[in-house]
Length: 145
Ligand SMILES: [Fe+2]
Image 1: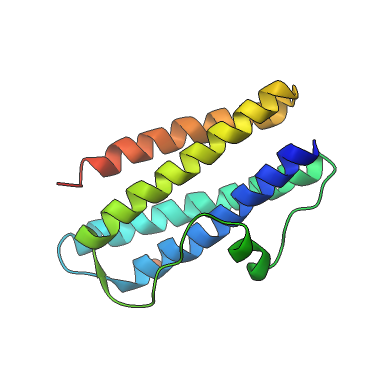
Image 2: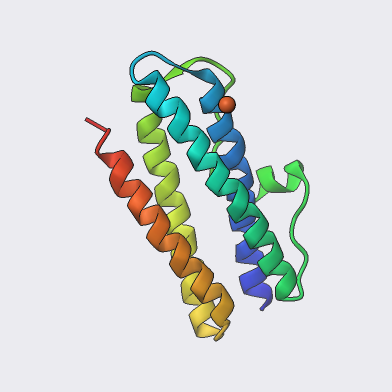
């Protein structure tokens, strides 16, 4: 259980940093496809916001403690922050593709660990995330020309 909770805390950190990055991009996006990408970024971070709460509450359900400070999140994530500057869709799409892949690897790692330890609730949650992020990844890849 400890190992799963610690992996879930790494995921919680990834999601928190990703949330900040998506909203930062939402505020700083300019140029081609502005309306489309600006709106899509909001849709992404609304989803991530919901997932942050689900993952934290899952850690509590397992009898463990979710990380709760930005310092902890930055120390436990593989997602890098974005600078506070104007960006274009051409610049951010490849970065988002990489971040979705980082998250998908994390979901898979947690799922494998949950299967081994027979923690079915975590397994089910990871299945949901794997299917939703695989679809997001496929869709965003269509923009990367
Ligand atoms: Fe907005």
